[in-house]
Every structure is written in C-alpha cells, then in structure tokens.
Image (cartoon, rainbow, N blue to C red):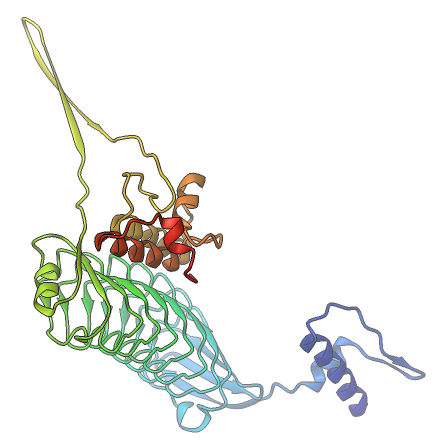
Length: 385
C-alpha cells in the first residue's frame, strides 16, 4: 500500500508541475488511487511548537509551514535559531497584533506572506534578509514599519503601504534592489534616514505632504532614480540625502526647501503648479434686502493623452494624479476614473494605471522643461516602459 501511495503522489505531482488540468484514474487489478492515498503520502506532522507571546503559540510542520495562532503581541521568535532555513510559508491568524523584532530575519526559503488585518506594527528587522521574498500583503490596520524591516529583500519588486501607516523606519528598505516603485500614502509623516538607500531599481518616488525631514542617505546610491517629488511640508533635507552625481530631477514648489536644495546641489528642479479654484460672485440687491451668492466654478475637463487632469498641460500634477489612483487601487480601493481619464493616464498602454505611467509622464515633463518639442507619443516611442 505504501508503494501505491508513493506512485499516486508522484503522478499528482507530475500533473501539477506540468500545469495541466486533468481527471486521472490509475487502476491495477487490485488498486485504485484516490485523494486519501495522496494526502497520506505527504506527511504534515508537527516538528516543533511553542509560544511567541503571552497569548500566542506557534507550530512548524514537516512541509515548512509555520502557523502562528492566538491573540496579542508577538514578542519573540523562537523558531529562528533552529528553523529559519526551513520555513517556506507562514500562516498568521487574525488576533495577532504585531510582527515581532527579527521575526522572520534570514528566513531564506520564505517567498510570500499575508499579514492579517489587525496587525499594527512590523517591528525592527522583521523581514531583514529574506532573500527569496517576492511579495507581501500588508493590512490597512498597519501604522508602523520599523527600522531595517525589509533590508536586503532583493527580490521584492513592489510593496503597497496602506493609508494609515504614519512611520517608516530607518533603513526600512535599504538594498531592496528589485524594488522599482513604491507608493507612500498621505498618512506617512516620518521617514527614517537611509529608508531607500541602495534601492538600485527604484525609478521615481513621491513624498507625501506632512513629511518634514529627509534624512541622511534616504535616496543615496539609487542610480535608476530619475524623479523625486517633494511637498511644501519638507523643511529639512540632509546634505547626504541624494548622491551628488545622480541623474535625478526634483519636483516641488517655488520658494520651497526642495527648490533651494536643488539649487545648492546643482540638481535639476521643476516647479509644480499649486491647484487653485475659480470663484465667481454674484450680488443681487432690492430696496429692502441684499443677497450675496458665491458660486465655485470648475472649468470643464478636457482630458487628453498624458493629461488626465484635463488642465491642458502634461506636467507633474498629472503624474501625481496617476500615483494617487495607483495607491488607491493597489490597496483595495475602487477606481473612480472615467474611461477617458484611464486612457489618458495609461500612457504605456498596458491596460493598467500605475507607477510606470507616472514615471513616463514625469520623464516627459522633464524633457519639455529642458526645451524638448516632441509630442508625448513621439517621446515614448523609442522607450521601453
């Protein structure tokens, strides 16, 4: 019977690895393979277990699945010392409130993880040097990303930080060389030093209004970075925030610290226009009363390719518009764009409105600002977006 189980399991594995869908029947004179045989042939015994907080327990099975159950804070990670190279997947139950310090540090076989709603903190070094981590799902409940949280997660290509996170720790994404885009929500008010240090694949980033300080090494050694958008709220930028010989362009507002910093460092600066509203006032009078009516009017939008805001210009405001939409959709929100706005925003025509479109729009805006005259279509044609 044991041989039959192994044979059935091998056949099932062959079907899965071949990415085929089939209904299989394997019969001999005295044997028919069934689901129970296959399940029995794959052992899932618990190899170790224990506690990882006052009300949290953990157990690791023979296929490398770590399950964390209970309620409250994760205070320590006893599995790391012995099993860090064997953990392939993690199941965290609802009720867990935090991912503890160094919880999955150097878990070299871990490829993905979903953090349940209710977790508010990813502590220091929680996923440090998870070299095979490709994706992570973060809940809306999260408020804090600790120091060194994702250091050297070189295969992590994107991460969606939910609106609600207020703090990104020092070195949080240091040497995440595969990271090409990151959306920082408006809720973030603090970004630690060297947060994006050595992110060699990062091409553009927008800092939200509310952040006041850009510290040492924040964007240092980011050779692919071509655009940084900084708000008025930033009043302090370290002399070592950006490497001197980088090809980045800073986008900001006239009279801001972003502009003066760019001039001091010899970095190209593009001034963004602040949004304004048009107000029309109508005064009606009679012999007995005076009535004042104020009406706010908004010009009709005529969106066009690369200009989803419909203000008649392709500029950083359009890129910001795209990033805001991308942040909302990528964190589970529904798109509010019309079909016309979507077509205008999707400049690389891949059927998605995302950071790549924003980066392309910013690159074109920078090109125009230096005297370029080609249309957006002509500008994009030779490029691979």
